[in-house]
Length: 210
Length: 368
Image 1 (cartoon, helix red, strand yellow):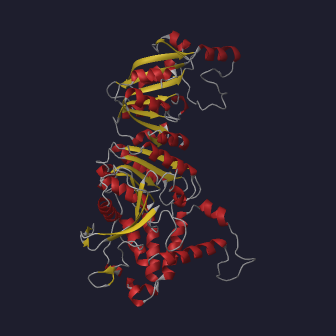
Image 2: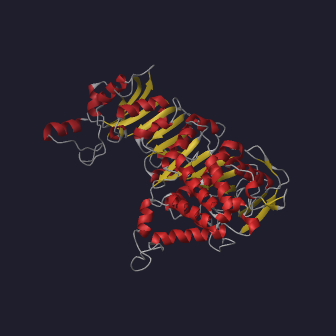
Image 3: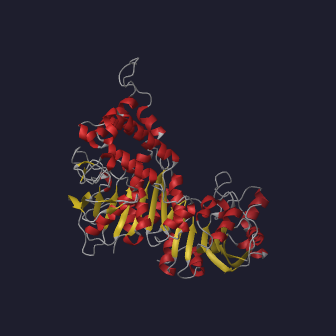
């Protein structure tokens, strides 16, 4: 089994073999399963739905029912080499807290998120004066779980504010991975529909919540 | 498909209270067969008032086993794949040595001379049984409520002797509220004049009224408020009120029935001893760090914990505290909170999600 999703392929490329991995919001455990098979990781998961957790159990995965916003504090500092949060940061009540917690319990974090700075999103706002509905953001404003949308530039600024170093960034558009990206650059912030960041701590960070 | 047996031990059972219990006998029941590798044994730990008859007709009531819905071909506990063991706890009254047994020192029933036992003592006796059955390492230990406490104690005391630990609606220690409810039950028993200071057997009587009240009070804690309301509401037994103290309401009649049925199958002194064991249970040593230390050697055990949203006796927060400690200890812990309004007793009832998750967990962890 090889990953169909380009972001999964990128995650498999970035996670070292044998790493201790926590997948936050692991769903039915597809990514964890891939990581265990391909990279031989020691994987754990957190999943909000009981159905998702049950599916993970049947796959032999160790998964705890819980949510990213509240339950990362269940783990001691440095418990993992890599903590993964896929397409979820924009939907949690306290993204800054979650990001900071991820890098308390993990050496590194991998975050993927939709880019609100994508040109279609900007165009929707500019020309129609309406909240964007795109491939990466398909729901209307009143129906979406995405309550903390940001652009790549916004995310890079938050990472810097938390004292985190972006070790790698990949941008995806049209279901494909584009060339290695630098989030500060304007062109990526226009072109990426979704993006992936690999982050690590740079010495003591600032306090997680003001 | 099942065998009943009694295992007698020549070695005394060492007790947490400092003493030892000589002439220990443990009544147990098995389902299925031990495989050649001796790797398919599952120990099921029973709850406070249950026993070794988790499946098959109960010898005294003729009713199906308390976990009948979990045991059978294609079910989570499958006698075609697993060797399932369930033993009556020490202190119990279904064949294992307990306060109703004969004290070899006096040739009379032990009564209150029986030593106070703990959850760890129960587990020590189970470990002796498992060893006597020639099993070095259990594939899994599983239990709900007090059975879940035994599961945790197994992982703490014998981490190298089990591969998987499944704790359903359990807790790592008895809370003040848990102890309080148990004390009500014990006081009801001891207030019954027929209790006779625990020596009722030699007087040819039984404290049935006290034990029934204890059961009635406890039974309320096993149900959720919505379930009780849904089942009974304010429905009456007959047309109109009696304007007296008969069981006017269906809920009263139900509780009286629960109490009356219970005294038929349970011993009052056993109730005192087992509730005491639960009250004394505390794996935390007073702190979350203490609980994590209890599991320090259990890193190779795969844990799975279940709680029920409407269980107010051993609520989800108790299971979460255990998961937190397991994570701190670096153990592999899974946790599922099942949405149900059936309260604590949900672990005994039809909860498809529990059945499916348990089957999935055991299936994925299958012995190889």
